[in-house]
Length: 168
Image 1: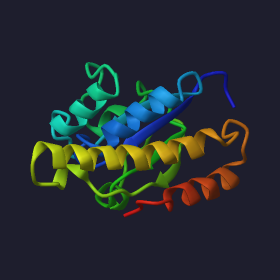
Image 2: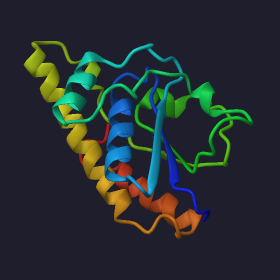
Image 3: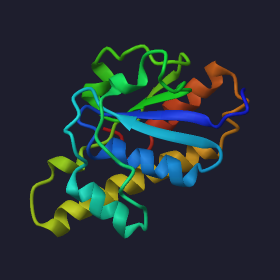
């Protein structure tokens, strides 16, 4: 493995909720070992207000987070990606662009908290649940010596992590 941190791209169709949370959790919990990004096939343009409220409650600066196209991560000027994680069923079924670095791919499907209708408290509770499920998966990833694991072994572990509680 190279001397650079392991790079993870979290993908979802709209890149406004789950993938933004995934990027935040990976970047925070994995600081020093992981550099995290997120993107979508059809980005909404802005993160969901529920995602931004949750990040702010967690003490995470919301300024760096934006809803962007996964096309930003293809082509010669894109950062190399070691792992691409789809977090929604739509993105998992779409043909992804060619990412630099020939990344491993994993699917960690979760229900979309952005689809919850109700009071702000009900929406916030859905985002908290999604955060909890993602945090559990990221902790499981960080418990692995992924920097030195064989691709096949890491692929198996990523599938196991993706099937943890909350899997959609």
